[in-house]
Length: 155
Image (cartoon, rainbow, N blue to C red; front, side, top):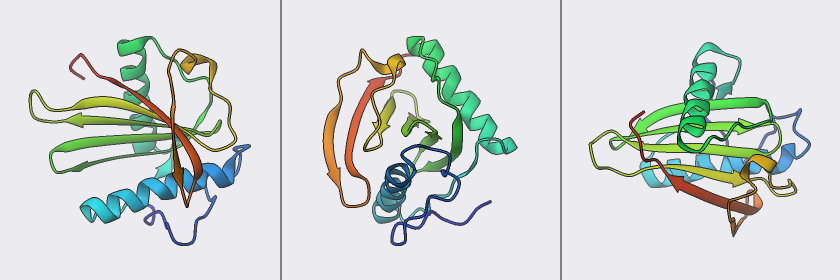
């Protein structure tokens, strides 16, 4: 397992091939800060090519395809999956600057959704053109554009 993502000294390690690597690193650090402050959880990622990372990428891709017919065109760079307070969180960070997260409550009837965040400086990917994105400011990531949809099926 890799070290926790540092949200004080933001690093582009693992994301260097992205044309928006600094903004994507800020987005990753923003998520790390959220989980540390809210849940006391250390947010770690690993390469999408590692066995555990590849399993997360496959799971997220299956949910996107089954729920909305979405296939992300960009290659995945990093991924992580963990459970906090009865919710399984899955994250994939893509070379384009896209971050996809799946919030999946383990209890029946709990919240289940897919979230999309676009790193500052990237265009909306063609596969997400039908979504409306809200803007939020982040000291770590600049302007983050985000959207989501509710998961309707069991995964």
